[in-house]
Length: 138
Image (cartoon, rainbow, N blue to C red; front, side, top):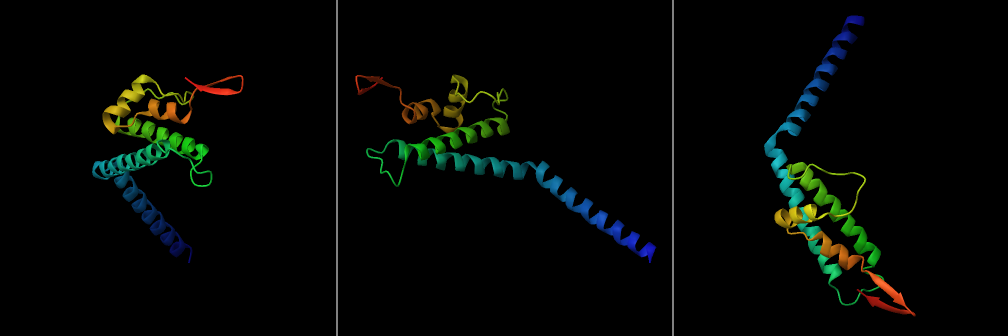
């Protein structure tokens, strides 16, 4: 009985090792990685279009699209662009503490993904000056 349980344990370890090796093959296989990077590009373009449509609305309906929602979606897009740049190896100098968009990041995003993060952030976070109760843009 004791030998039979050990054999079952060995078979289970072999199955787990096979499953692990299969998982490692899917992680290391570049064909799967290319498909995943293409999927990320597609999702970035979709998110870019959603954010741009929301930013270019003339009227923001209070229940459908709020500025907080637009800013949240823009931050998600920003993270997706960072992830794309890091995964593809186009930009490896990511500072995890800094969240601001530099010129280098924006240029690479424009070049590879057609995403202008500085323009989007300028629209989502406008600079306003309050002078005697009047809001002046600029």
